[in-house]
Image (cartoon, rainbow, N blue to C red; front, side, top):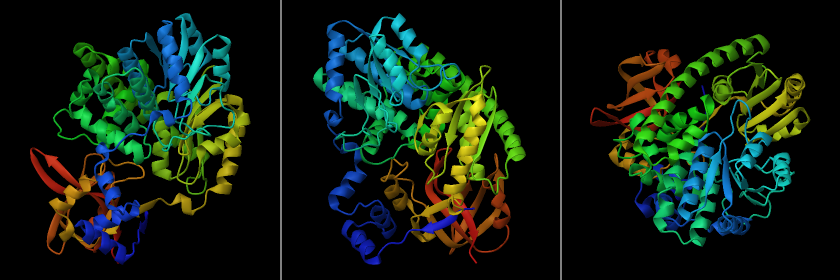
Length: 567
């Protein structure tokens, strides 16, 4: 159950915007909440795909990077793109590989093995690249914390250009160039790009310098949309512009690999592709490559020009994703047993679990599911036969897991990430001390209030305000994501028409009624609230308004987020 927080707005301001732009008050509230109140701001928000991109040369070191890449072309040097094994890394690597093909630079790509090398640049990877006679490495979605590794690359006469979007620490690598909008003294006006967004800015700069045709970049926007959506970055500013453009491109994509992914996920006949489609249907298949086999498979799929090869690779990823689900289920069961033996879920404020030879590819997913269940930061660590622990950490709002790990870095071999998600490497014999310090920090900084999830509600709404025009207006607010989430509404004193059902894996399906208006509703994984629906008591329901399409039919549907008794 959530704590509901209904946003409050000044009536006069809501009325003013509603009347000035001929929109319902509920939509006016959403614009006000996003600080969008002028004609220009509203027009730009509703038409993100028509907005201009920022100049890539505003990025610090962009000019140095372009000059070095031009030098590589002139000297016929081999270039290696060094990517991460997740979706953001795979799309970033694919994008730069394809743009280098267009400008005639000989290049290959290197994706580290999750099991043997772990995240980011490694000495093993650099040695492998040196054997291929590459003299320039360009990182994608990694590199900003690889101080020792880049020092090693420099010693091997290999230049490194970093493209990354992760938090920049106090110790900055001595790379030839660093393109990261989060670094100090960078004038780029939007610091929240995904890794693929940063790679795209380099592609834009190269496109300008090499005078490529405009469609050379446009054809790559599908990759930008997939990587940005999958990395769950802020869906505001330039991210929203790039994703809106990329979602349009995906519908008519020229990329054989993406076309096969659309077929396998059943999205090939959809008129529109959404961020949710990417996050829940496309992303797991691409992530399965790095989790279960090799991240290179995802890059192979996204860069192949062969329809046959694309079909074979997409089919292989589908099988890997099924295998991933099986391993994930077993790991969750292991984690829950260990958690209940070592923690009191009601009192302890952080969980650190470790075991020998857990599959590293599912640690992040399992940590996220533990947060969903217990609302506590969770760290999952797999220890290998050499006593090296590789872990994934996930956190809750208000508890910056990257910052917390930085306070414990004396125990860590390596770490990096974001406030809500991080990766780490730790010696087995330091895990208990790390656990002790993390537990103390969590006890000191995590308040009881932080442990109660808050459901932000945009507006109270009556069923007579929910119609096709409302659906149409809400669609214009997309693409959705962090900083622009789908609006959540509350309807008061709602009844249930007919008998509710539990369908699938613990989902609620029922028909909600208010003032004789009946609307279909679905509550994903909310079967625990079934008794409330059959209580014959009036209910307050919180929901997102959606459109359900089934067997060629369309109907308005409420996607239920929570239910409370009205009284």
